Amino acid sequence: MPVVRNGRYRAGSIPVIDISWRSRDMLKEIIVKACEECGFFKVINHGIPDDVVAKMEAVGLGFFSLPVAEKQQAGPANPLGYGSKTIGPNGDTGEVEYLLLHANPSSVSLRAKSICKEDNIEFSCVVNEYVESVKELACEILELLASGLGLEDTGAFSRLIRDKESDSLLRLNHYPSFPSYCNNNKLEENKVGRVGFGEHTDPQILTLLRSNGVAGLQILSPSTDAGAWVPVPPDPAAFFVNVGDALQAMTNGRLVSVRHRAMANSYNTRLSTVFFGAPPLHAWISPIPEMVTTLRPRRYRAFTWSEFKKMIALLVKTEDCLEVPQRLEIEDQCVALRLNHRTESTGSEKFETASICAEDKEAWKISQYLT
Ligand SMILES: C=C1C[C@]23C[C@@]1(O)CC[C@H]2[C@@]12CC[C@H](O)[C@@](C)(C(=O)O1)[C@H]2[C@@H]3C(=O)O
Ligand SMILES: O=C(O)CCC(=O)C(=O)O
Ligand SMILES: [Fe+2]
Image 1: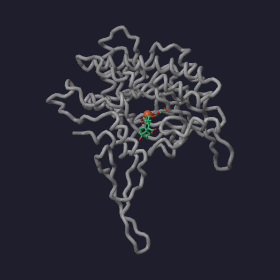
Image 2: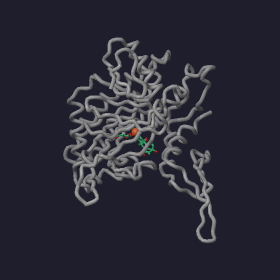
Image 3: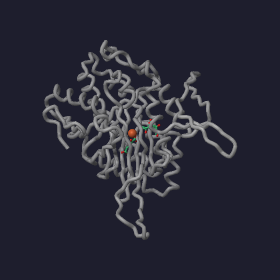
Image 4: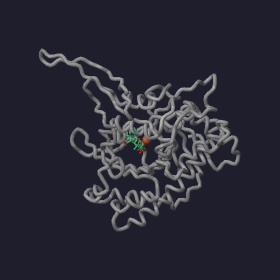
């Protein structure tokens, strides 16, 4: 995988960005390029101390190794807390258990009491220290992006995440390895994965993901053939960054929110720790005026973060197969969900069912806010 040293990376490969690079102008340019072409990149030399990362991983593994009954005391996820498998319409069949936390320190401390009764103070200290460090890295990246895009206000994106009311989240995903059998029922070393977390885009502004050394993350890179999943080789020393839907809208579609998924496998357990930098609930998301030009007319209408979240929550609840007509209601507004209709017959009866596939649901999310 190429480390970007000259402002270029091979098309189709995953951009690797050395954030300690002295030439800040060059750095801004390649980060913008990565976010425009891929919506995804790997950050090396990020400066987050090893012990902060190691303690976070130890706390995560410690939690998932608890007996199920104990983990369940931190659940069910509503959406915060401990959950397993049912992560959403696309991830329903997934092999994952997770812990979803609000990234705000007092919320972490409160939750910690149901997560690990004995060591809850240690748990909150570790998580809060990790969140603080990763949030700083996210803000540094967002400020480089704003500056690289030529925005006068270089805090336009990071301010939303630094806001004390920011709705940022921290998520721990645990994909246990599963046994696999060959025809004669003997355990085999089958490295073929199963979907752990189904395909989706992250709705927030910016996502920073770190995992242990186990593979699983895949991206649907816009620069590769349509439908081709690109495996992301694991690197526990790095952070993987992806553009979220809100940043796509604020940049009027110039930066792209990448579709991704995670696979579970039969040989090792994957743990990912994911920070989602989000605006406050009341914040308005709309294209920044400098991002709207005659060559790039306005693509998105303004929406609040809370409105977007409500729409996603409704979508998560929406069954894959629905009766027609289907309507989704968001803050008194009725929006129709585009459905694929099909006619089915049972005996003499004919009836219509409508379904929406996972890919369409994901595409539908942000497209609701197109002008
Ligand atoms: C499949 C889904 C789960 C998700 C909502 C969605 O429809 C698409 C985005 C998913 C995601 C990813 C980031 C966060 O973990 C999350 C809470 C969010 O805001 O969007 C999850 C959603 C979820 O788990 O419900
Ligand atoms: O675990 C992973 O590698 C991906 C997780 C993810 O996409 C998410 O939590 O939104
Ligand atoms: Fe994600």
